[in-house]
Amino acid sequence: MTTEPSKYKRAIGLRYTRDHDDAPSIHIFGEELHADAIVKTAKRFGIPIIERPELAQALAACELDTAIPVEVFEAVALILAQLERENN
Image (cartoon, rainbow, N blue to C red; front, side):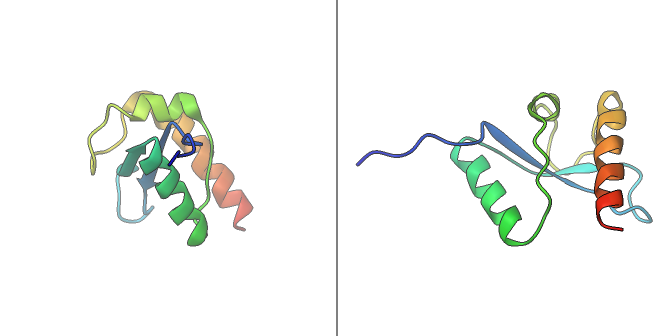
């Protein structure tokens, strides 16, 4: 039995509620097959998928349920703004 290689090296899910959170936080993280499962589940529930490997690498060192580092605020803010525009 052979398994297919993972399509995604890593997947990171962020959580952010404008009126509730001070900053986005790491909600879920997975590598290889776990990353594939995260992406598949997100797609099934209509959660947007943004592919930014360099940002995922920077966020990979963060712990779950912690705010993202200040160093990536701008990159994440640009993604959130893009998603906001697409949903309006």
